[in-house]
Length: 113
Ligand SMILES: [Zn+2]
Image 1: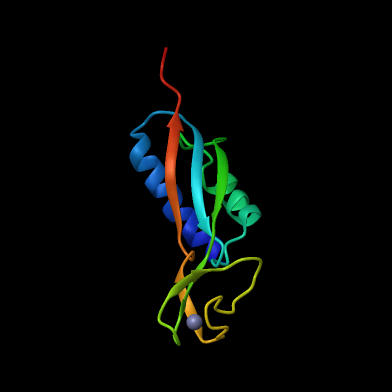
Image 2: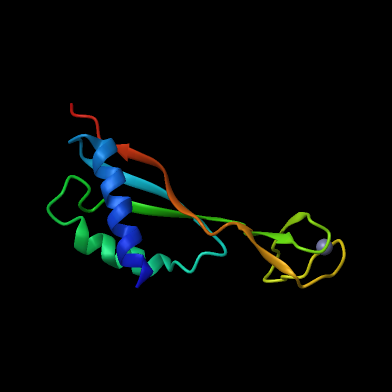
């Protein structure tokens, strides 16, 4: 249930930035290596945003490729198709380097006529 707390913080950020304006779209970036599930975030979003200016805003998810850091050759590399081996030396001794984040890239608000 990581999605509940991440959705809460997303909503907090969105409401903060919206400053009272009606939010129409929220653009999120989610790292490939994070365990967040789009559908769960959407589900919690529908619950949590009810009654706020962000109610019925559309969530857009953008997946960011994951990055690992090879402990043997000390170089970062990106994960392709769940291949976690270092492309340079073939080592499996790698640790997550990036791509585990989840953040709000931008929001769109409707401008009052
Ligand atoms: Zn390596």
